[in-house]
Image (cartoon, rainbow, N blue to C red; front, side):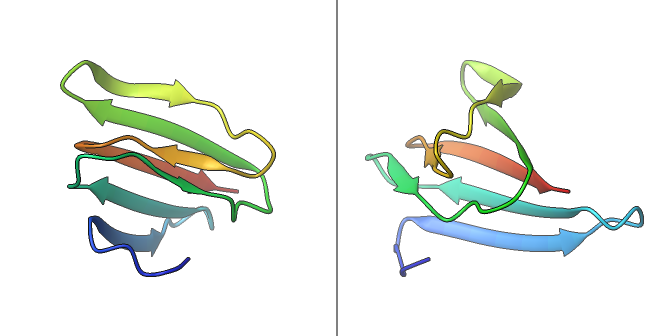
Length: 74
């Protein structure tokens, strides 16, 4: 992923082997990442959503502005 100043990213591996990537978009514009190449579950948390399931379309994930996106890779 290219450097995007508004994105804050952290990642970790769960005991079950799944990997989690947390992406906080602090900016005012959404960002699209077209780098998902494996099975993923995506959840959105913002002022209007609490771990709402989001789609992965053609390997792309949207990071809405002022929101936390959780990606679980299996």
